[in-house]
Image (cartoon, rainbow, N blue to C red):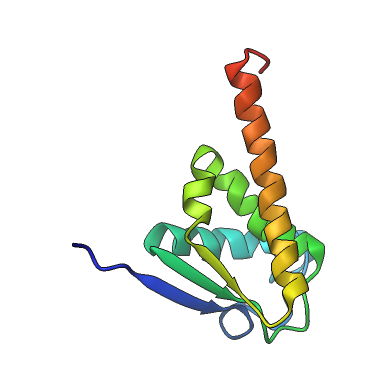
Length: 122
């Protein structure tokens, strides 16, 4: 039996207290960078990944959507499996709800695209 591996990642301590924007032009600690340099490697390396959101000055929608919606788009057809490894930890329910909404929205787009493909509408 293989031992389950898990990682706790604290954005405020390990990435930035000031995450901002979607792309590098928006600032050094943007959502694209967080997704590429942090989320994707963690999801590929661990069975469970706890992302701790508390401790920052806040999050813009562009950062959260690019990070978490972008994560779904990156994994595409394997997104549900990969995203199931992710656990969002925060004392602010609206942050968790916002992240979950971006994930669900991206999953719906992928599902629709797959359905269209299977129906010959690609």
